[in-house]
Length: 258
Image (cartoon, rainbow, N blue to C red; front, side, top):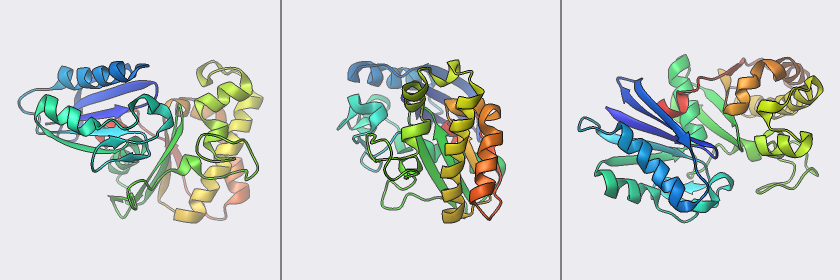
């Protein structure tokens, strides 16, 4: 058995996995302080832990030193900057701990679920994460490849945390709140969702030209509104990309499994 932990800016999801399937799951709020967030991470692991668990996989937002386990200057977990989360978990549970980018874990989980070898994906949530699977293997480059949410779609656009005019500057939950005055779950305007779909489509067109994968997957809380932005997104992709690649909404559990 294994435990998979998916740490996001809003919630922490964890599952007990046997033979690739989640047999028990828990979700809690991420928390607001360094102490509270660490306590919540340890709590979900403790809740699922048993003597049969061989190792713990942890997905966290980047940039992070995943090999050492040290959290970097990541927008969604600023409270944990410099914290060696891997060491904390290993000392508490005395098990092997593997850490990777949360969005990369989601895309790897989707590649397994869909049975595809070349998959690119976005997690549309508090921020915008990304992941790349090439020939069935997760591609991380020198450690933090896959930051697709920080790719530029408007070079002279809004200056966000990491980049100017990045996709995350327009279609993350925080950006949607800034532009439309409402969080995605409360946003009803068809015009607003068309504008959001247009920007997501422009970003995906770039990914099609760069990777030409088998499929592009969308996860995160905003992907729950897939039906609201899908039509405009696909129209934008068709107008920009000469190659056809299917874009689908992913499974909520893929980040845990990945």
